[in-house]
Length: 317
Image (cartoon, rainbow, N blue to C red):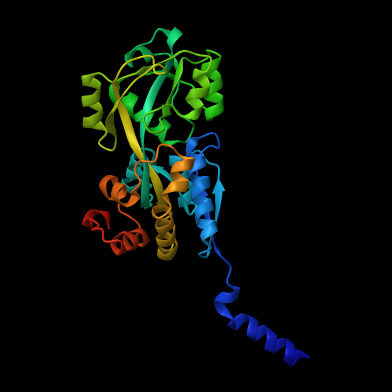
């Protein structure tokens, strides 16, 4: 009997891939109220349905900065990044001073303008008018919060920051305990959280003056400045505001094979992502990534892009 048991044990151990478990991939998304959480839900379904040996699960997080720090601790495999935070993490600056995180980019999927939104009844019409006012800088631990603090420091404006989750900050604005908040747009429009506030509260979007724009460009090269169309909800005509790119980056130890497969299925299954997230930057994620990436790409992603005929610049390898 012992010989028979040993025979079957050897057979089981030598049968290889037939008994191999899927590689588990933990994705750091964002707050569940964020439009980006819906994007990552669609991504997880795409990869899981493909049955390519990856088992993807979502983790609700504080977004950009939080995701990068969790990757460093081995708690996440991939996650949402913002171009400002991944740049700072790579170079060991700002929130990552002296503690760089070599998180490499897989792909970029969104350009996120950072709307500075106030209650219209506050009477504030300029960023300078926020001096000393109670204002939400973005969800705690997010790339929005980090960028907001950097921008206002560069401009020499000191609001009284009201911190918390998206839900907590939103409640403060609705109840007039804060006059406004900074929120990422979806495409060039309000995200669901801001739309919810606007249901019963008239809002106004603040814009940059030429001098403020020049200061941001000089002091914060990791950020962009973009044109916004304005409109009824925004309470005004066209304006300009700071922005960053949003995408997916990987933990330093993510395998090349996993990075390759994740990139492949993201780039080749655009429609489900577009249906879940209206702010998709392009139907060609490869082109957008090679155009906007500001730190090196993961070798697995490089392999996929080169297989598809793209030239990956030396600075992104």
